[in-house]
Length: 328
Ligand SMILES: [Fe+2]
Image 1 (cartoon, helix red, strand yellow):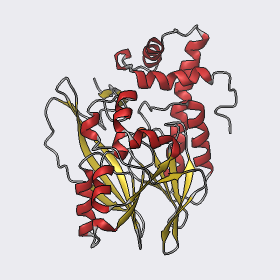
Image 2 (cartoon, helix red, strand yellow):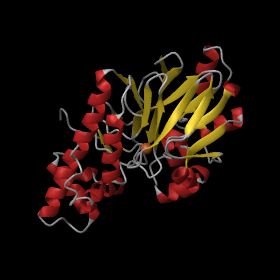
Image 3 (tube, helix red, strand yellow):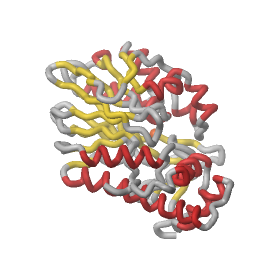
């Protein structure tokens, strides 16, 4: 069926909905190149699009990608590690750029989900780098078995190479010095997860948004819609941003930056309107039933319902009396 959403059991949870144009369901690995596609964004910022696969118990293999970002300065800073084995493409890229992997001395993890931390252990073992993350994400980064139990996603242990110690806890407005006049400002960006962060390079006019901005046409995963909206409003109010670099989206620049964030807000507003509308009709007490009904109201198959989407939608009920939620 044209335009019919496909099922994605990727690292952000089982059965995240993504469009066919972005994802292909298949029963065997696709005949595609698995080389990372690097892209120089600014003088120092490089984006690595890292393809990977998620193997489902049903025998279906999902093709996915995630971005990791390198800041090549006097020091090398890596923003998110990608999934397990992504270290190979990161190290190869550095060597082609005339740098040594051992020059990575800082790995900033925007949050603890598998596609962001999967290669952290291997990278730290090779480089001895310091790992930095928000305090609220520390528990699941330092104990991935705990994360797997508390937030199971398909193929977790294939996607995540192991736990790493977080040597630096990051908080709102922290400044990460990169040397030679470069620094990153930490923006606490809760919503997707409690300790999600975005990073701002004022000098290069780049915003690293991780998973904070919902992707147009997809069902986002978040823990708290009110926090997600607040984060998006805040990101939208930032000035002087030329490049928006997200984990799951192509790099955006110029006018696309605001359009993308505004589109994310519209996506959340649409979901919120539907879910709170169901609440007005007497929402089902069962979160999964609410999820199925909300998906159906969006024109999506109710069978796509899963606990992570249900929890995302459920947060709208907690914020249903927030008249100001989507106002400026
Ligand atoms: Fe995530």
